[in-house]
Image (cartoon, rainbow over all chains, first blue to last red; front, side, top):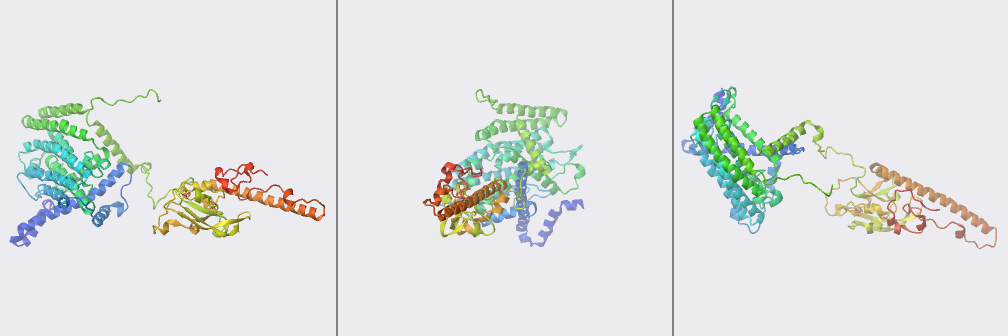
Length: 391
Length: 246
Ligand code: SF4
Ligand code: SF4
């Protein structure tokens, strides 16, 4: 029964495939994998927009959207209808082909990344041996889409936004990938399913997740920060800083194309969070052995919602960084920290997960965190201003 | 240390998030169409014309002097004088507006028309739901819609209305007293003339100098008692009791 509940979607797909003629089976298999992924994540996107707006509202002691449907839960529907029926304004001198292709490309790139994410036990669309590599390759395509959008718009704000986006995404791509290296070394595989398998099982009360090791803990947060920057979310939302650049690279987009960009961004965020779950939070594994009976995909989505909530929380808290702070943070903190982290995960392999390992790797990670943090602190700290005459 | 500020900030936002569910006074939102807060007495949105009694035509205080039309900074008032006159609240014959339009899309709620009106005829409303379905003609608000009874004025601005009412009552009492005195003087002069005395006394000389316009409560100084409504803009504290010299 537990088995069955866990594998219900896998079994369902197999049953449906048996009804299809053999010649059409590959095509049907693709559709049966892609369709649900798109449907589920589109729903998640809709839910996230309303949750985000309500959450941010509560953080600012407001109510948030509460007009459409009960508690405003149908707000995404209204937003979607509005986006569809709005006029699609394309400026006169744009490069029309690129302008139209960019939002499609950003969605395709984001959706491609989902093909290697294990959403549950045996639930992965494409079990590649180099899954993690594929994920980053597909994810890097979004940069192309963003630059296409900024360049083809013939608008200085769009171009500036796109430039910022490229600078930011390339800078953060490096710590993003380097922070996963420790996991790849520990798991000994690039396959996403393999990494999840490597984190299954429990030692004592705790699961064998990589986030529960010193280097995994640091790597998890490095990955989350870099993923936030990759997804252009606050506090790294310089490319679309509303107060500076109108809307950044999608200034010249309206109506449904704008909605597609929006959708693509959120899909990218979900994909990055899902990869963080796969790499550090044990994928679809249950956190406690006694909770193993809950279907694996539920665990996956619970963790995903948790990370989405975290990113909403961070968005509600942090102000936007300045461009120089952004770059300083990437090159002076994230990059050395992720390199140290690789060293720590290598040491962990030799010291084992005993007291020695925790002592050596933990102090290495914590010490470098402290030292790099000192280096990042402003040199001449701002002191309290003393007014001598105007009292 | 790096990150402590972020953690502090996140604790703060978490406190806000949870607190907005638990504490009533954190969530100050008034959900407007369903919930509303009563208008503040000092609120002002758009002018309206006050009339006394029940009949908007007869009781209208406006005498079409067109001062407000001239003073309105964005020039959004349009007045046409009627040729027919009607008695005002003391019974003096006065002009009345035939057309009195205010363009709500132009009015900037500055209250200058109220300040300059010498007849307490135009006041500020507190109703802010002024949207219209017609964005051309509909935004021009006509006399019939602008006219609102004095009781409404009393309701929305009680303090102001009480002062105005006291003012007007004093005016009226004074005007009536004067009328009685005038009548008595006239009667005396007439009886004197009838007595056949050779005095060529004019009744006007016996009577006191002509009083200021009775419906002119804003004149504060007795010395300018001959001033018509044209000088009325000098008086701004018209809620003060008028100090007419007799
Ligand atoms: S100033 Fe007063 S009395 Fe004169 S026209 Fe305007 S509202 Fe009427
Ligand atoms: S409130 Fe100001 S703008 Fe409006 S009608 Fe009166 S004088 Fe004109």
